[in-house]
Image 1 (cartoon, rainbow, N blue to C red):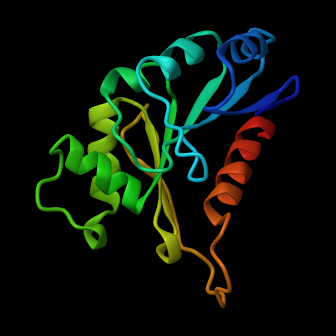
Image 2 (image 1 turned 180 degrees about the vertical axis):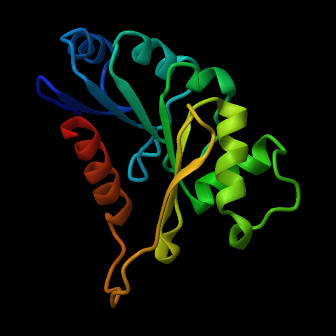
Length: 173
């Protein structure tokens, strides 16, 4: 699916490349790419991100969900990588970046390691522990927020809502 306006765009991996490239060339300021779909099992591979991201001068945000293998070249033109703890763990283990790390050990250091390896800003969501944002320009954790204490009824869509709000914030700042 492709949703967009003059200032924002949200794209999923199931969008056809022609429509995708046409929308990108329309001058959207921010592009959000969802890597795959839990319901369809579709995963974007190869240079798709780089090819599509190269077509825009805007900020490209990649939500690498669900967890699957990504190579460095897949993120050449991605500005911000968003991962949760399990997606971060998958990438760390795939590339042997943080040997011995467990799900419980994913945190600030993991964000720094992913930033150094992929060369883009990293937003790491940590569930009830909040989130960490590491900007690529200064390699510093510039934002660490804790999650509000709430009674959790259902976590379905929590990550998607968070990412939607984050990209909206980027587009309207």
